[in-house]
Amino acid sequence: MQKMHKRMNWFYVPALMLLVLFVAYPLGNAFFVSLTKWNGYSSHKTFIGINNYIRMTKDPAFWTSFRNTILYGFGSTILQQILGLALAIFVNSEFKGRNLVRTIVYLPAMMSGLVMGYVLYFFFQYDQGVVNEVLSWFGYAPVDWMGEGIRAVLIITFVNVWQFTGLSMIIYLAGLQGVSQTYYEAAQIDGANKWRLFIHITLPSIYPSIVSSTMFNLIGGLKLFDAIQAMTGGGPGNASHSLSSYLTREYFGAEKAGYAGAIGVFIFAFIMLVSYVLNSAFRKGGERLS
Image (cartoon, rainbow, N blue to C red; front, side, top):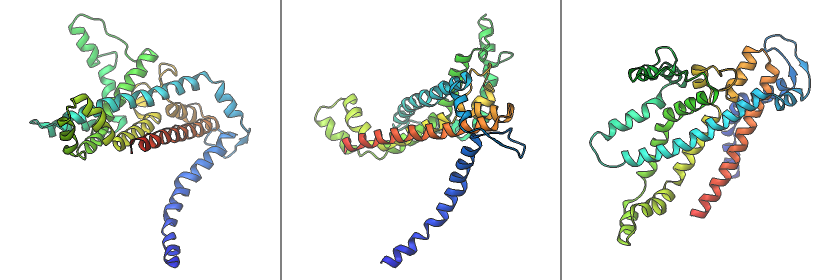
């Protein structure tokens, strides 16, 4: 038995090699780059220690990007869970055309975020944008939707919510279909109304779906890049940047690869911290329900 166990350990080697090649090595290299002054192209790097991290704490654009990242991540995730669960409950009921509704809601999740961003850009652009064209029919002046930072951030958040609500719907729908109807029937016999059924049966039963959907949407929102790049490029100024898009600007636009490396290490550490805290909270919540 011990020999078989040792033989089975060899099956971990390919996975560990892939982990080292695609996770550990890039992360280690990024950390090394973050300690240097480098333009990203030359073979010469100047070691400057933690200066890039010190600079990061004093950079207003970094803090604007960090604030936006929080909104893109947590704001999108909250809305996606509410809408995804509501839609899952709706399409889980019997009605004609429910499969068509499922397809339409899930369709945006199948598209590239970059494509979705460009499509929605043509809706909100100032000249000949769909939204401004509709406003002109009612006699209103066109609005520069992307010309104000907070408004651009809210629109990008809306785009991210719209694109991935369908994914949350599918996850919740799978959870709902695994709940036995006998629980509902027994509770209804005891006089439970629909709200009590939802709170005391539906939500505890789909708890694993809540965890999966929340973590997937949150990590995706905290890494949001493509929709920002397509719709605003981080503008006006740096007002709509996320940390990911600001990192790209600093690396390729400003040619400050060392500083971009420091931002990348911060993104990794922040997402790891958020994931750990939420996983711990979800684990404790699951223990209370069990």
